[in-house]
Every structure is written in structure tokens, then in C-alpha cells.
Length: 306
Image (cartoon, rainbow, N blue to C red):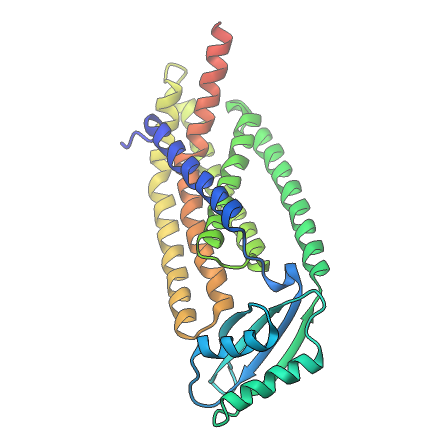
């Protein structure tokens, strides 16, 4: 049997370090925001043959007078790779400026038949409203989770179990956020989608552990120490958690590989953070939620003894 509860200080130290470093990096280097949150324009260019991505980006930046983000995107109809330029500007890009940039590209790559496939301007207010609504939804979901766990597991101190289950969920969201920060992936709707998916996955794994704790409390009797009770329950759930996580991670790894080979960055920026989030969810359910609950119960017992 693995002494997971006995090593709780190690788990807490690992998680705390990752979260603190993530916040420091975010504060020092900033967080990349996708166009839907900062506004601007998306311009998709098609071309024949091959063009160096860095050179293509340089031509646009020199004519626009600002830095841009350039991504590769495979056209599902033609099978060719297009370049999608993200231009940060609340006003978007004017037709005159777009024409100027296109002309410069066509002159630079006269033999590659550079053409504008599509142009769209994005208002950041839409992204902000969507983000606020998602935060409200997550807060409401967290409150309902606490109430549900408090009622279902009232025999093992349900309110505290619910609170620490939500703490484990916030821990998982921070790990997903770390992926976006360290890999300089722009925060987009994919971040919100991953976070919401991880919340559902992680709470399910945590509830399974709590269910084992409640059942073992009845089977093992009152003489069993809290550490032994929780440790036994986590170990009994360990195989299920690992098997579920491994199968999901393998599927996501395959999606990441296919998206990488196909140059579909929108899928990569969803699948890769999801992969990390799944691992974080299993880790928090096993090593964070239960040990946190034990720490709180020990604190309460020590306070009561005084």
C-alpha cells in the first residue's frame, strides 16, 4: 500500500511550487490573449508552393508597423497550408491597409500567387462578456458541488469535503493555466472549454475517493485512524483512477499528434492543455483532495483537544 497521506507535504510542496512559479511567470512576462479577448483582425492567406513562415510574417509586420501572430492552417478543401495572420487592434484592419499588405506580399512572392482567402474583425467586448458569464457559471457550479458533497457525504464531514474538492478543482485549473502560460498559448475559448471539462472529470474522480472513505469508515470501524482510513480508500481507488487517466491521455496524445501533423493549431491548443489537465485531475483527486481533508480534520481535532 502506498502511503499517500503520509507524503502529503511532498504533494502540497509540488503543487504549491508549480502554482507559484506559474503566477510569477504570468506577472513578469504577461499572459498571451487570443484575438477574441483583445480585439483585432484575422486575415487568411493562401499561396502556392512553399513560403518561409518567418519571412511571410516579417513582410506583414514591416507594412503594418506592429507585431503579429502567424499560424499555419490546413485548408480541408484543397489540402494546402494557409497562413492565418492575427492583427491586434481594437479598430481592426482597414481595407486600404489590407490592400497595402497584400500588394507587398504579392510583390515579394510574385511566383507563389498570394491571395486573401478571408478577413474578419473581432470585437473584444464579446470575449469579455463570454468570459464573465463562464466565471459566474463556474462559481455557481462550485457552490452546487459543495452543497451536493456536503449532503451526500455528511457522515464524514461533508461541508469540509466539499470545500476541499473544489480546492482540488481550482488546483487543476491552475495547472491548465500553467500550460497556457509556459507554452505561450493565447488564452482563448479553448482555455474555458478545457477548464470546464476538467472540472467535471476531476470532481467525478474525487467523489469516488470520498465514496470509498464513507464506505470504509463503516467497514473498518471507529478505531481506525483517519490517516489509515483515507490512505486505504485512496489506494483502493488508485487502479481505477490510473486506468481511466491513461486511456484518456493516450487518446488525447493521438489527437495532439494528428493535429500537429495536420497543422491544426486550434485543436492542439485544446487537446494538449486537456491532456495536462487530465493528469492534474487524477493527481489532485489522489494526492490533494483527500490529504487536504485529513489535514483539516487533524487541525480541527487538535484545536478541540486544546
